[in-house]
Length: 99
Image (cartoon, rainbow, N blue to C red; front, top):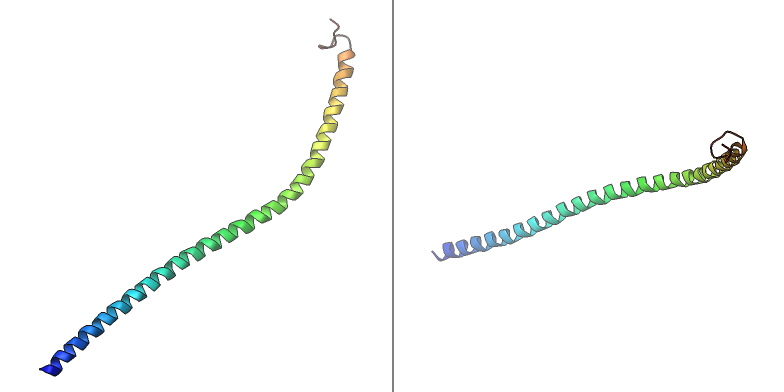
């Protein structure tokens, strides 16, 4: 009878130890799942940053092209202002001051 009591106490202690170990495993599993989710988010973020950096490099080329385009538009605007002045001095043209 005494041996059986010791055996039951040992079994209960082992079961309790297994429960503590199981709880630790569950905590570690949860941490690993959260780490995986964080790694996925980091990967997606890194891809987005890389895509934005590629786009920024392309925008530098667009910026230099836009400067050239802006200069050409200014030239056309100056030409149109000159043409407007010439047309404004012609008789019978609105805005010329002659009616």
